[in-house]
Figure 1 (tube, rainbow, N blue to C red):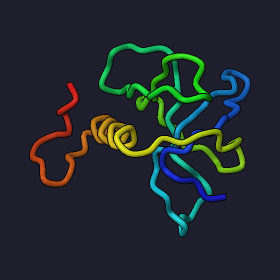
Figure 2 (cartoon, one colour):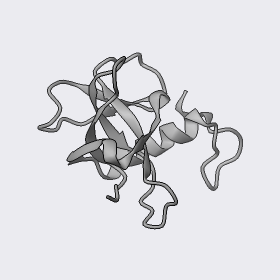
Figure 3 (cartoon, helix red, strand yellow):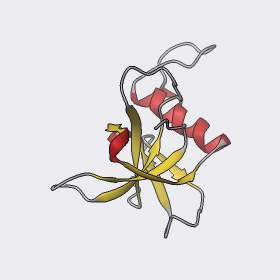
Figure 4 (cartoon, helix red, strand yellow):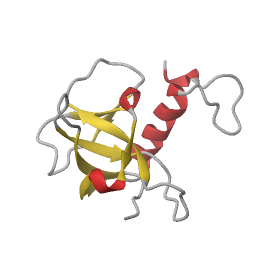
Length: 118
């Protein structure tokens, strides 16, 4: 199985968790050494932080939802159920910017830390 950035899957997070939708944030890599994707959980709880990206309405989202970038997790491909949807374009740009902010990565062509989202 190969995943693509922006694809949304259901993932069973186990005993302490629940089945949750997650959006793939990692790059498409056909030669990846492990069957893992870096995913952000989708939540309806908005804390108004730079770690959250508001998602547009989609049929698989029942209410206003957000990608929680602070909750990034490596998910094994055999744990992914779906895909059930996908996000493209501006939303993926915002997710990438939030990932850069999370890790204080400076986007190419900019100086200083990745703190533009504050």
